[in-house]
Image 1: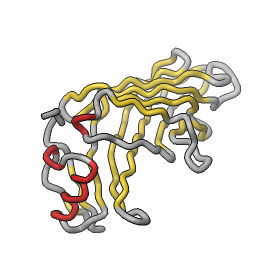
Image 2 (image 1 turned 135 degrees about the vertical axis):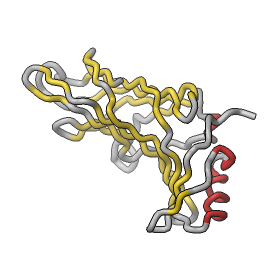
Image 3 (image 1 turned 90 degrees about the vertical axis):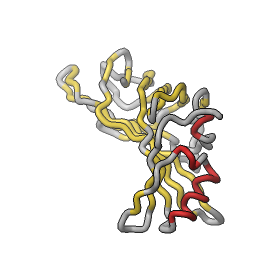
Length: 186
């Protein structure tokens, strides 16, 4: 659920995924977080929110170590916000923190807190607090590597491959890996 200025918005769609791509010197991992809410009418306006990563710069631990992790996403990266909110305009989320709390199967309890200034009239006037508390499904890892063995070796540099099912190869040569179950500490 998304809470904005004491108004609740149900999340209708979410994504938590990782993309491993060929960077300048080696493979790099990018984390994607994306949330879309149901539409709600307030004061003659239809409000529907999209909260998404823009230049998110977090280093995920291996998935079994993710619960209890907290990341400060307050500082811009190359003058770009790490996360944004969109309704009628795209605005940065300031003083943001994201927390991963506890696995439940292939989903993890997730919390986002921060502030946004995206409207100049009631009910969302000024710099207002926003938060998300949500059981977030992990959509998996996509990697820019057509060879399955090489893809598995590369993923293993970032997170333990033993938690993943065999990959699916798409038409562009990218492999997608889904979790086989709940990542647990050994």
